[in-house]
Length: 165
Image (cartoon, rainbow, N blue to C red):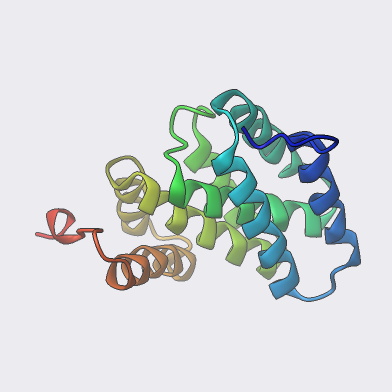
């Protein structure tokens, strides 16, 4: 377990998450998201599910930095762990962030969707491809698809060929 004397998963997660208030640059938020996702991968499935639920709730919040952190964390986590059973309709919740007025939030959503697809190609890649057939958000969907392709190209053991005709 991730718990250590005097430092539980919840305490460490909260400590790292609060650092988003001290960060100005996008890369800083991305680094925090990577740390949070790494913690989530290492914890129990119950804690992970609860945490993903909290991240989804943060997507409805008013603070852009918190929404972006939530999207980036979901993406980083989804790359490592299949999230389809964690939150019903998670891919649609992430796709809703494409409607944000903030370009950073839209970009974070595209990143999240692409990374989630790596964690479950059969579950999320069709969502990206089907959405590309609609006449909206092509740039963001192509960005999500780029994440999938780049990760597959740079990671040994990941086979993309079964998803290409």
